[in-house]
Length: 337
Image (cartoon, rainbow, N blue to C red):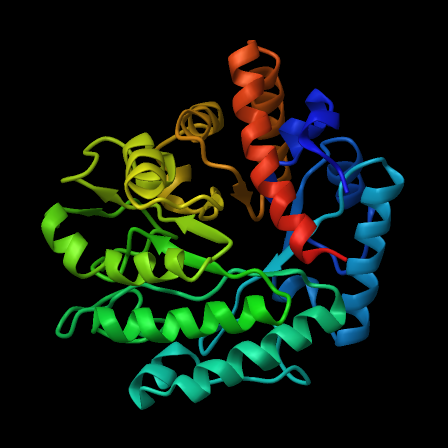
């Protein structure tokens, strides 16, 4: 397994990118991102999936491409939440999702989801689940997360989320708590534009942050940051670009030591308001480990250029890049055979 000290500048830069792609096989575009941009991870969508054997062949080919190019193995991720967000359909097991688990208040259903999902992901070479959703969706609000959340009670969301996290990870698949510090109060979809919330810090502490505290206590491997401005925390930057939220709150105050990542930087909340260079530099300032870019390969290339330039800018910048690399490689060492 690679150590951060052994990585070159190009690998230190690329390791922090998790990228989407168009095809269902290893093609020239994907090979370029793996071998020339040294990306550290891939994310799969329905567009990349036809059947289990095809997914397995794709994952195997991508991993071989990374290793043959002298890079660490890839973290291959997917959003397999169940319910409305499940990238793998039949013959993979189809679950009703968090809303149904929460309505039943069922730890058994949460464990069943985690156990079967982990087994099926591992069976085809997918190595990370971008789940569970830990957003609290208040009653009486037209929340964008109403169909994806466990419910409106922070303690219930925390309990069921912790069960899913521990089950996924106990069965060899790192989990991702999302969308920090909680988007259950938003009614504007960040896929479309940039939401903002005026929720007081005290209210966040007693509601939205409760499930994330439980996730951190349970050893969740990764936390995904939302594209939402929380005005009482940081009136200028969304959480995914905010030093105050990603570094001060999540790491320093709440004590999270694992991998942090943005939500998809191709979403309208970011695309409509920030250019790539600004976005990546904010991510670096906030010590966020992984930039998630799901659709635009030109944006991937630009982000890689900015990351590489930053690594080479100063000794301090390289040391910070190595700290992120250690967190990412530590997760890979635990879960990649």
